[in-house]
Length: 429
Image 1 (tube, rainbow, N blue to C red):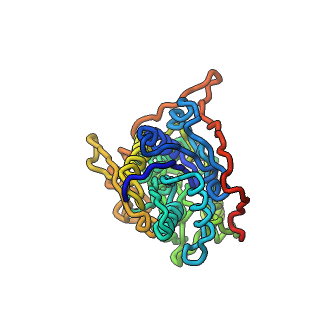
Image 2 (cartoon, rainbow, N blue to C red):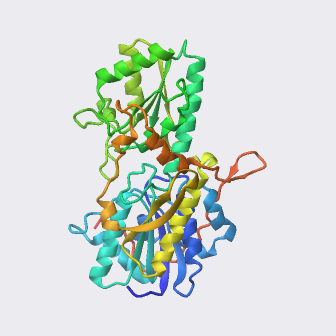
Image 3 (tube, rainbow, N blue to C red):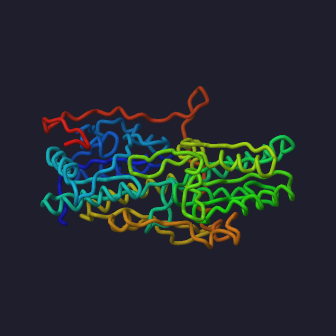
């Protein structure tokens, strides 16, 4: 596609992370270096919903310090969403509305930061633009703490969430070791719907025989009740206490979520099972079958937003992905997602960016390799440690206020005046 001249819009989707704003910062600052091609830089409020509802703002009116401050601000500064667009073959209404808004604002560049579902949305928008003859460049920016996006060595956001979780379980282990005569077992529940990357990552905290986590349970290894009880008893016999890292997406041998066994949590807007309660289920099993007291820790959303302990490598690579997205776009590249490519490891770790087809990413899923786990599947191997170690390096700098707390940016959001002169309610005809 030849180079286009027009405005760009950036949007964020899915669960926020510690570094997704760094990606947006990179895309904004790189786009601003090409005013002869990208004439305006807009943000969509709450992801694709902001486009559908025509709620967009001018990022070029933001103070330069606000844009720069995105690199040290967690969450999704543009606003995120979990709105599921219908299949393009069944309903084009939302997609046609998006193109209607794009035409009204002369949007020729669309950057979407998100996971699998977001890349699917970006791919379908790109497809419809081609079908209708509307010149539009679409580039996705990888984002997911779960690290399950295919075609990328790792995902921005993953290193920071592992660093935080591993430290939390390290500290929980110290607590359990100190007071195991009263609280014998601690279970830390960790995010990860189908992939156990984060849960397995907590294994980095185990530097010695006594260190937590002593047992790790991930979705990729079927949970067997009898083996679990045996595992816990063996650790208790050796140490007198036990700390467990439990992935929220743990499944039994039939592929059913363990969390769903403890009650109905419903489904989210993408149709995915709402998970939660794994730690409580395991606690109940331990107390009833092993007859010792167990405590649970559920970090929830704080684990993905922990900017105060984010990996510097993660922040820098997220920014690099945003820059690469804008550079690819001004070169006329469309229908791609920016990926991370590991060129070297260890002390000489080096990572660059690449590109993958949006459609391939949307339909792929990267699970935790079995060789990253030990034979029992309850601990990690040296291969996993080599993979993870570079991603946890460095401490992301943050500003601290006079009150001793971090200073985070909130965008001013200078709203654009509506141009289509009609109200649109997503999901309704």
